[in-house]
Every structure is written in C-alpha cells, then in structure tokens.
Length: 437
Image 1 (spheres, rainbow, N blue to C red):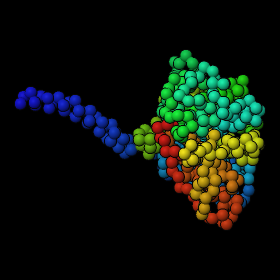
Image 2 (cartoon, rainbow, N blue to C red):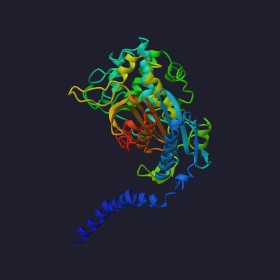
Image 3 (cartoon, rainbow, N blue to C red):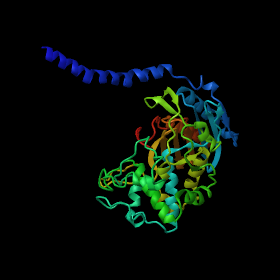
C-alpha cells in the first residue's frame, strides 16, 4: 500500500501540478488581464479625430457617420486607434484618423499615419506581376525554376500562377514567424530558405490553402523577371506612377524602442498587441519588434488608407494595368473539382451582402504583429474603402462594410437599398488567426 500511495503522489506531481499550471495560464491569468485591462479611451467622445475636409456636400453625412462608427469601434474594442479612407467614382472623397498613433506620447492618428498592412501587401505585389505580364517578361504558367533555377523541385511542377492563387501546396508561417536577426541570408533570400526544402501539403493545383510562403516565392520571381530588387521595382513601376508616396517597405529599427522605431518614419504608428487571447479587451502591450522583410511582397509594406484607396482606384479604372491584365488577375480560380476558391491571383473575389442585395467585392485582409488592415473594392458602385489599425487582431471588416454602404447611399440615393451594413462581417477574411495574413 505504501508503494501504491507513493506512486499516486508521483502521478499527482507528474500530472496534477502541470494541470494546475495549465489552468492558471489558460484561465486565471487571462481572466485577470481582462479584469485589470486599462482602457485606452474612456468612451467614443474621448477618441481624438483628425479628418480631411469633405469635398462634396453630398458625402458630409456619410463622412460624419463613418467617423462616429470609427470612434465607437476604437472605444468599444479598446483599440489604440484606426484610420480609414473612401473613394467614390475614382476620387478620394474623405479620410480620417481616430485615436492614438502613439498611446504613451498621445500622438494622434492622422490621414497620413502609416500602418503595417500585412497581407494587403499581396495585391500590391500582384500589380507588379501584372506590369511584368504586360511587358512580356513573365510567364505565369512556366515552372518557377525557369526564374529561380536553385529552388528545389517538388512532387509536382509549381507555377507562379499556382503560388499566386494559394494552390501550390506550401504551408503558411505562424503569425509571429518573423525574420531572424542573425540569419546569414536577408530579405527574400532568407524568406525562400525558410521553406524551400519543405514538403508540399498537397499536389499543386488540387487544393486551396492560404500561404505567405507562396507569395515570397512570387516576390523572388518578380525580382528575377524585373532585373531589379523588389522594393526598387515596386517603387518605380507601381507606387510612384500611382502617387503612393506613403507606401514603403517596413525596414526594422531598434527592437527595444517602439518610439525610435516610429521615429524612423515620423508618420509611422507605434505597434501594439493584445495582452491575452488575441483580444484587445484584455489590454494592450508593445510586441517585440518583428522584422518581416523576409516576407517581401507577402507582408513587408507600410501604407496609409489613402494610398491603399489610390491603389484600389487604379485597379478599378485600369490606370496601371489594362483591362485584360486586370481581368486575368481578378478571375476567381477554380479547383479540378469545379469548386471556386473565391480567390484570384492576389485578391479575394466574391459576392457580398450590400444594402438590400448583393454586389461584387474584390478585397484583401491583412493581419500582422502590430497591425491590421482591410482593403475593399466595390466596382459595381465605384467605391473603394481601406481601414487600418495599429494593433494585431483589430476587427475592421464590419466597419469597412458599413462605411462602403453609407457612401453608396450618398452616391446613389436611397434607391440602392438603404443604409445597409454590408455582410456584417467581424472577421478578417478566412478566419485564420494563427497565420500571417
């Protein structure tokens, strides 16, 4: 019996103590964090607002209501801040910043504040692919080894088209999987090295699975086809022609000084992250500075909502790419089964609720450490909306839908189905909170 008692005590020590610790870590600690969380803003009325004047009187009420919704979201969800911009009929008609770009220094968000946009970098890079296609420098269906001969061959040939469509079979890095400060390789070279030898999750072309790795590969192909570093090519061929002066690579700064990181670019927002449960209601903290330069065109850009809206306008009005190239990039890809992926070559493409009916939405979400973004185009209504925040896991999709609907009513009048709030989404696109998207 003594031996049995001793064994029972050993089991308790072996399993009971870790279980108790697990309970503390999984339940009690988060509960304490929620209970002790400091509110960034006392209420919506206390959220500072800096907005551009509304150019057309017909949009004044839509802008005022959009600002009210933005301030309510910032206060309700305990966000440091948010920024948004809207274009109608090819013109930027309104932009506003709400809350703090730097909570501690009480530096407000303005329409010029830059944010990490995560995977909203992908449609930007897709436009670069479109430029190369128009120049005859890139074949979407050629094996990637035609451009990158050192990239290992897999179980089946992989094309740039498949990497762009997320049907190549690559895995997706964890949200916190940034670049190594001690790596011998840097930038795209490091990004490729991280997954080049991995086995594919499935045979290329047979399934859909979002993968930032695939767009690192696309970025490397773009560099080779362009004969220029990716950032130089994108600045020259995409951003400069469209007047996107605030869209730049997110180069790393001092990882221990958020204020200094922001100081590298005075308009840049300081990064924040939820303390627990991927929920900003638990309170905010500064994350360790994560360098995403090795993700290249999959997630390395800083931008503003106004710049993202300028980009959306250019895509809708074919100011950078001709109609046929735009159609190619924006055609939803189907699997061999015939099922649509609702994803094209760098864009989510689907019908969504809008007012009393449905409309085409071409969009992309982005989540990264210290930033969330949403870019939405509604070409049937000639409306483009972009929303950003300087915290991981901000819920921005519903706000984007509501703002688009408000400006649609202002543009078309009540005859378009009333002041609907879109499809009521509160998610970030595909629901993957553990992936860099």
